[in-house]
Image (cartoon, rainbow, N blue to C red; front, side):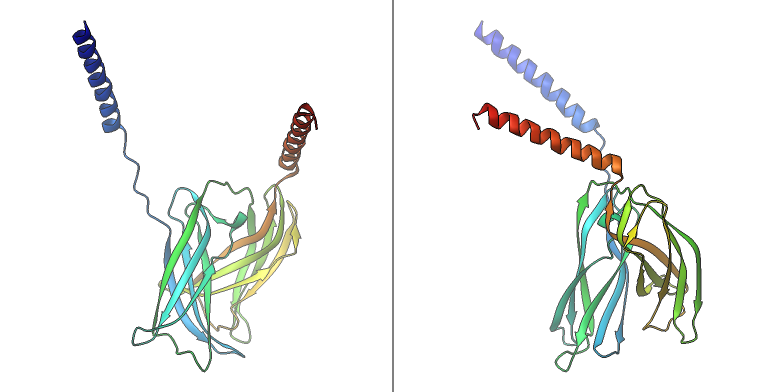
Length: 258
């Protein structure tokens, strides 16, 4: 009797193991994703009251999910491969401080040059980021854009921005990425919009390439914002949840004799 039970148990285990094995063999493998990458980088020296070695570039999100906390760490070396200095920066914050799938965002790294600093012979860039499951609900439209050189030789881009999302933008600005004929980033500049922009509001902008005198082959505009407040219905739902949680907490504490 016991031998029959053992044989039956073994048969059941074999059948279950076979079904599980077939399931995993037939299950489609997860697609191999291309990670976010720095798609372009260039450097130049900016002579001003303080001299800088500046690196400008662009990060593209190749994933199918949004990414946030996108940081670029730079290590600068001299001709003998000795480390001169290190620096880091975050990409220009995109809508709700994320880069959506397929979206690009520029960055600028500045290294102060002084009497103790050698001009870098080369540099390495390391990209770090965090995947995000958030969905952006902010949306902007760029209208009537124009571009030209001013009398001083600086490239000027101007136009209008409209908040076509459902909420209010706080601390928004327009970021312009300039490209050479090969598609490399040559400069990054920006201009601030009004502190508050409500849904439907329009505001004009004017971006200059100053202090760089360039004639770019092309450029792209990106609206970034420090905060984007959700529309009123979503905020009411959050308030209702908080009130309900408070009522439950008070009821629980009274039940405990509070």
